[in-house]
Image (cartoon, rainbow, N blue to C red; front, top):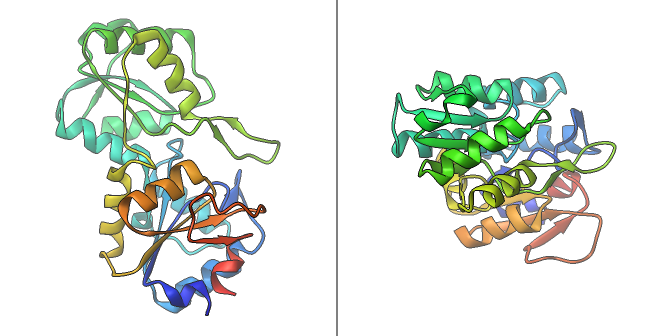
Length: 253
């Protein structure tokens, strides 16, 4: 029996499962078309905070993958929710991330502060980006040391790219935690917050599986939530997963 028939809904990672960089991985487009035709609910759940959920959805559509704007859940969204529930709307924050992430924070009603105004910050919001700088490190570490909530979109040390793994949010967060002596609250996989939000998107069907390529975040998080884990890998080590597939075609074969 195909795995598609075994489960009632799916949470699907993007990087390393659907896309490598911005290009679809082998079998992904056809497999997701079959999943869409099945009528079973699915949502994309990613620790990549560089784009908003809507921007991720647009990228997927440009690659011939059906994705509604509300069908992509990012760890940026769950981090924003954490800050809104804590320091609250209107609170100032040191924000480390891409222009898209800063825009999402601002649109949510959180005030990104200039780095030299770190003393005003009630939270430090950390996500990966390619222009991470020493001034960002200094402002984030000093604000966290002075008591600002330190939150991050994930601890993944790397992210898959066509020319090999790039440093991820976890690498940047490690520098900030080391400099501040403060351990961050993380809202991306494997933490429960992003899985709970993903299950809400699906309507909480009975049998749900998480499809991902990282045993330490995708699979470990799924197992902690009591849902199945399907590991996309070319290896043979199950790493705690319920099923191994080489690519998304294995979901519908």
